[in-house]
Length: 344
Image 1 (tube, one colour):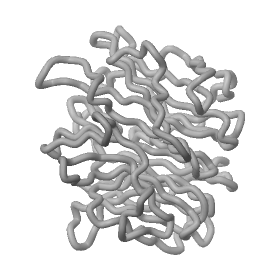
Image 2 (cartoon, rainbow, N blue to C red):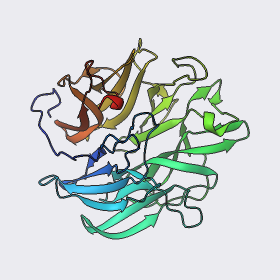
Image 3 (cartoon, rainbow, N blue to C red):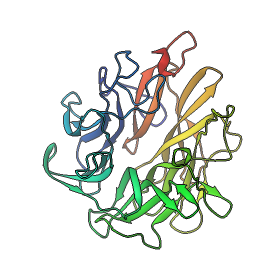
Image 4 (tube, rainbow, N blue to C red):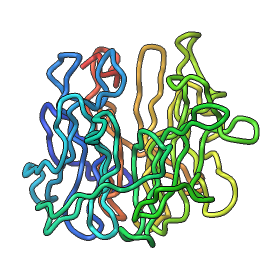
């Protein structure tokens, strides 16, 4: 669809297996996505969110497909029961960076991997990107620049600080790094004067999906804010908020004033010219979930909602080109037209 919501058309119907994080190759007409294969709620649809469960990444796989024929899907990695393989992004030099749970020493470890092609979709090689010791469960990698020391990778990962566990955004050279550098820490939920930390690993509120602008300077990410929640203990829910860490200076909260505590602002993606960002929101209204898509300037101004048919529940938007958006979506369910997958 165009930026103003006109020209909406179906790119591809993935059938019963959800496709998310759909992103275009920087110079060639190829797309990549995460595909889902597990259906724990038994409704016949394998999705990122399954009714009655948390996010479901068991048996996920990375796929690519040509823009001219989106039905011609090639699986690149993953598809192993109980294991995650997800969140692929194209690099500036035409490779795929992704996360995969397949460490030969401990199969529960998650690793960042990079796939090179002889010609898409033929895989030439797969390398494991070295990350600093002490960073655990790296997720949502994103690379700016070439796949060497002049490029940069950002990702979220757990870290055990002297004050407790935390999950900030980290930055390393694209060639990999075995040690943390002075500027490795990018952004995090802030408590007092530093990153929030928790004694219990399962209680950590952290960051997800950091995305650099194309110059590799500013980093946008989503995080759970310890000071913003809804519900009642012990079932408090912490929505996501949008933040940006500029190349210099402190991180900036891009959440618009007046945003309800029941609304999450998620998954921002930069336009190719870095002059605009697209993202989606999840709004809880009683027992009804609403999902919307917005565009804004990188500083959070000029925010506009992208008009969509009411029945569509959009997720993971990105730019096909400077004037065209693409996104995943399902049709709402039930008499209230809720985006809750339990109604599908």
